[in-house]
Image (cartoon, rainbow, N blue to C red; front, side, top):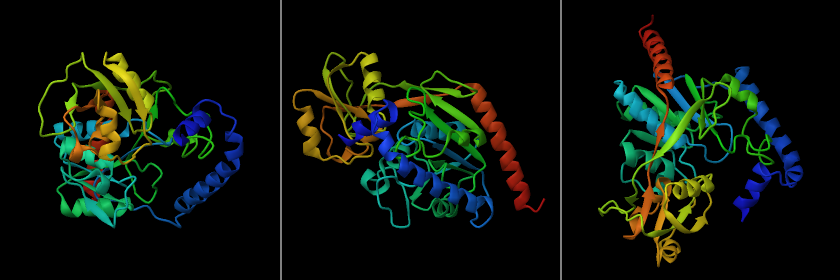
Length: 336
């Protein structure tokens, strides 16, 4: 399976990386030229009238961005802000920009946007051009802070606060750029971000430790109400950036896993494919996968919600920085 081969190359020292290094050199050159164009003013970043927080990473694959975005939405609301979210809508072809509704199909807007809005009902707009998505968000909704789900490398979008996520277990793999390794940018990029959040630890060099706390299982079909019997055995499936993390988590929680099935990140599912897995056992999946299955979910399909947990020092530092940015932008808008 291609995903497993990539994992071996990036994280387990597979020798095929040497064949891919010339392509990594091309990737570096193109990225370098893009950054130069912005640095010297040939390309301009669009500065927006409200604070912009970018939540991203320098690696490809899952690192916990979506739970972090949800955490930020809830934190900002608790302190009187009205956040909105923008995203590219990875894996789907969005024509222009599209507002995400609570019942939006993942196949139309992307699995992560569908999950974020289903969980929080936050105003959210997806589109390949994040600047256009942000402008639509400001025009159509009452928001005073924009959170960009991913986009650390999308330099056309001006930003005020950058948060980079790192997978605490896999970290940066073989430290090579794509495609020979998982890096979108070199490790030097972390020196310019405001916060580095370590998902799963142990935290290093001033990183902020984040834990993903599991909640009780929920049925994928929102119309059904039931409580999972932990004596029941399950088939576990995951179509995320790091499926093994999910499988390890549910085993540690004591669920009786008889089989694990990996799918590609962001993969679309069909009913027969998953029904075949759940003939004899309940099917257990991630929340991100669940939003793709809502329309055809069976009564024995469950998902595990997780909530990001960060420390109060991070909350205070972020809110202080945000307050400074908001006051500065408000002053500029009034000509001060």
